[in-house]
Image 1 (tube, rainbow, N blue to C red):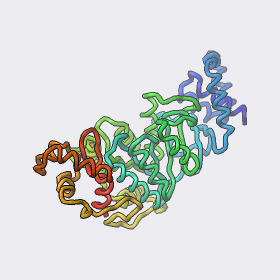
Image 2 (spheres, one colour):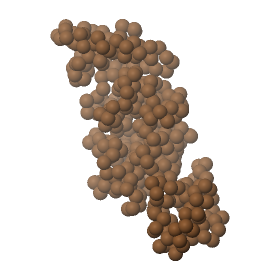
Image 3 (cartoon, rainbow, N blue to C red):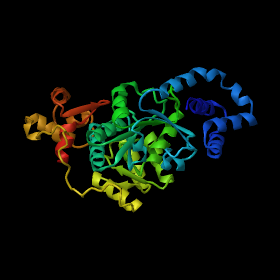
Image 4 (tube, rainbow, N blue to C red):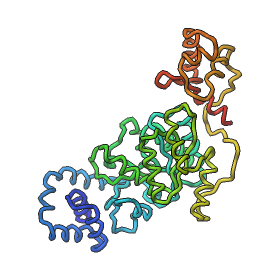
Amino acid sequence: MHNHALASFQLLFSPARAGQVRDALSHYRNPCDAWLALLHNNRSLGHCLKDKTRLIERGLNWLQQPGCALIGWHQDAYPAALRQVPSPPPFLFVKGRQELLWAPQVAIVGTRNPSAAGAETARYFALCLAESGYTVTSGLATGIDTAAHEGAMQHGTTVAALATGPDLVFPASNEALYARISQAGVIITEHAPGVPALRSHFPARNRLIAGLSQGTLVIEAAIRSGALITARLAAELGKEVMAVPGSIHNPVASGCHQLIREGAHLVAMPEEVAQILALSSQNPHLPQMPFAHTAPNHGTLVANPGELNGTQQQVWQALGHDSVAIDTLCLRTGLTAADISSILIGMELAGWVENHAGRYHRGVYGTASARG
């Protein structure tokens, strides 16, 4: 087994093209013979590995840890769905519950800087879809990805695809989330232990998310974003693409609106996602959800706007459902900027309002109340 693992790293770190490695693995059915065959045809491959010794040792040590595995193209454990993606990885590094890679999955992706409502929407959709039996797949980024992973793990399972080696956490702020997923869900990457996050790794990571999932749901994304790359890769693979619409004044909703214009399904409830996936696949074994018109209370803070005093209610109504600047609130309410600022500070401390880049919007209190 050690020899097979060593040969796998030699194949991975050699200058041989991914297609050559896959072909050799398919033909010889084991990494040792595949490596020897490629080396026989090109002796220079071995010389190029001299500066990879530390990474190879790091990878071999990582494989000794509980729950860590290396899946090769030649193995039955290699997820069938990933064999269809552009330039499939010859090897996959997996940590956690490997069987989840074969489970029905739905991708939830979006911006790293969501509104409070966007993050809450992602968490709620993920919770409902996971509770119904879907494994929620995302990319462990901050923002929508984080909310999706967290929501899914409340009542189900999740897959995190990385743009780094399996032993690195990017961003570092998600270290605790990474640890939870590696125990209750599964981590997957095509990069060996020790490989850092590079810009080119993220679009490649996105193809794993799109490939593993039955469909991709986008919640808040800009026109030029990794989430839209994932959605378009999903469409190219013949998978369903869905988007939650947002305010026309919200810049991170513009990508969702663009996807809808291009033919993505507009969805407003998790039940619609499940129905779309079930209808498109015609697979009776896919999770189903009864259609509900209202969202259940799933632990979100919910409060009655009637608890606000008179001027707070005036500002609350002036906020509406879009993010606005203080100048706009002054025009809508007739209050001075000083008055508005004082009111907003109190509402922000109480969780009613959030400030994002100098623009204010209703916090999760208002989102939950409006939905329920």
